Amino acid sequence: MKLLGKMAVICGALMMLATPVMAEKKIKWKLAMTWPSTLAPLATSAIQMSQMVSEMTDGNFVIRVEGKEKHKAPLGIIDMVKGGQYQMGHSASYYWKGKDITSVFFTTVPFGMNLAEQNSWLYYGGGMALMQKLYDKFDVYAFPGGNTGVQMGGWFRKEINSLEDLKGLKMRIPGLAGEVFAKLGVNVTNIPAGELYTSLDRGTIDALEWVGPGMDIKMGFHKVAPYYYTGWHEPASELQFLVNKRAFDKLPAGYQVILKTAMKAAGVEMTTENFDMSVQAWSQMEADYPNIKVKTFPPEVLKAMKKATDEVMEVYAAENEEFKVIYESQQEYMDKARKWTMMSEYYYLQTSELVGNE
Image 1 (cartoon, rainbow, N blue to C red):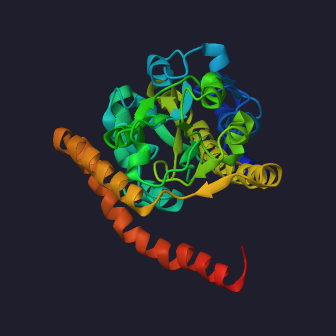
Image 2 (cartoon, one colour):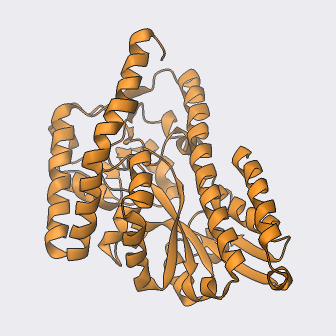
């Protein structure tokens, strides 16, 4: 909550700038989330944003946050916000893949940018404009809403030593990554979250991906699958705040600034909380289940995944000009950014390893 403390200073400054008309205006909104209200850290972002908005407007702008247990439509967020049933939503862009394939870029894509690269592309590389162009089709504004960073590649009941080991493997993995694995012979399936542990335990599926230690530990996958593979498919999963355009445009200018400020701060807070949750959870997993083997897919498998990813992306780009434009924008930015990522982060970690800081 340290970031929220800093927001109090901004809050005070914003409130001093507020006009008397703004102070008298009472506004009540609703926000629908894709996740349950108790699912930290994903639900944390919207809840904290709502709290900040209320505090910064002295209770004059209230946003009631509802999880999927309330509205019963976790993948209907964009339609509910567009229609005005809810003024806001909190979800992940790639859930709208069936409506518009370009939506995947604004959450994450296999072998794409890491968190720092993606945020820089969004705010300084033209990504925000491209994202809004997509969401203009749905009459909503879109804003970054928190990021999980690199997600793990999944829990496996058996070790993957070659491409042959993927053939016929039954795995829960959605989205573009599922399309990639399907090209490599994996039997891709989608199972409701509440059935995943039982399915993995009984061998109905052989593997699954979820998020990372901070969220995986609650699901218990580490108790039944000893191989934990590192990530490739979701290197920086960004969530989004969605805001109904008509509702936002009717807000006083001061409230618009407050809302944007609160969304940005809450997104950063969620990203930080998620990192800490994984730090703590992995420490516990490692101590309680020392037989867990953290693995990286063999080079042969990774190269095949990358080749299959490129093929999937190239097909979509050939069919969809907007997809091609966004894909090329990300690739061009990543080509430049990755050089700095390697010079700074990657080589620093190598240096730390050489001197014994694990």
